[in-house]
Length: 416
Ligand code: NIG
Ligand code: FE
Image 1 (cartoon, rainbow, N blue to C red):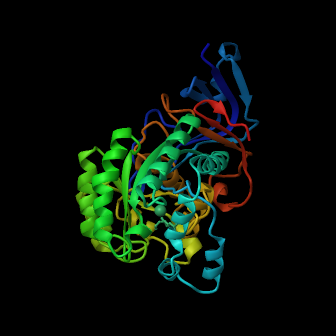
Image 2 (spheres, rainbow, N blue to C red):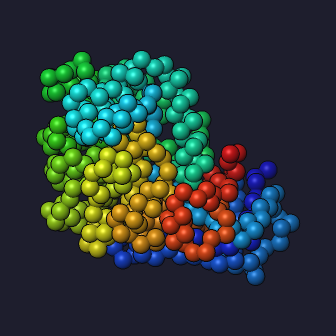
Image 3 (cartoon, helix red, strand yellow):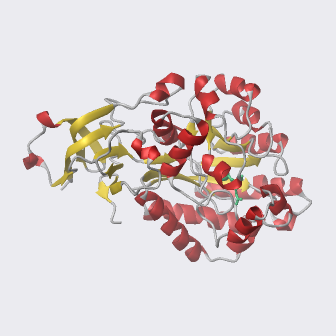
């Protein structure tokens, strides 16, 4: 029998629409629809309908009833950029950073991404799966219902395939989480190809990409298009090849320098260009003529001590903005989307409404998924409940308070 769930006495139902809101741009980002004193009905995996408690349906037709006791109900966060499949941890580099070394200096000394690559290639697929599953569960418990995960710590044929297979297992094991997979072979040049960057890219395109496509292991492709990593020409080549297999780009751009990554991403109709710690009018102007979603990762700015992206400028220019965690061992060892939303307010001067939309509705768009990030009839019932709150801004303001009391993913309560 199909489960029918009624959630009653919701203090505030947040982000609830009559139909899918689509992507929110510019001023539209400053509005979050709310309904006070509400109920929500869920049939199977999906939202059926909602309304005010004065019109509450009879409980008879429901198989489960949850009393929210005036707690607030939100759509789950959509985290459109993570690297949460990795081996080991890099707190040694954390010490180096505290001592004053930059991300680039650590990478040049063989640390950074190559350090994680060595660890990953020495780790079995099962062990990788188990540690990643633990992280994914923690993300879910902190309110994330939809997530993108990249490869990019293999940097060998076998290593990249192993990572992508782990992501596939995560998709199968957590069907209630929407997981998207991105091939990021061009994250750094694998050690075996040191000094032979062109041959490394050749290998990615002639060997790895066809094998990945044959097994359907990736939804998207990514390139770290930045100073000291991959060039604009290499990025263009990878995006063109990937397009032949139907893979759209989600590009790392302008983290370490003004790299040209935004322009090449837009030219190849990338779904998103991410990081953007360094952007100016040139980047804003090409984004305005595109459907590519600017995505910022304030957790990496926080952890690395680099500038924050100009999220305020992006929104004031009438563009959409998504915020994501960049969860990874080197530049953002956290998958907390509440923290990301708080950083959006504190460091980018986004309003609480704008930062909320950036981690929900627009995060879903940057993940290429339509039925998440908002509450509407037909959407997946992926929601989290909090204690009663004084206002929406409290979610970002009280940034370490454990406010979440329950997470429901595609209609199922998560056992925490
Ligand atoms: O998004 N910038 C490139 N990649 C990751 C960092 C990866 C790492 O240091 O392991 C990022 O910040
Ligand atoms: Fe990243």
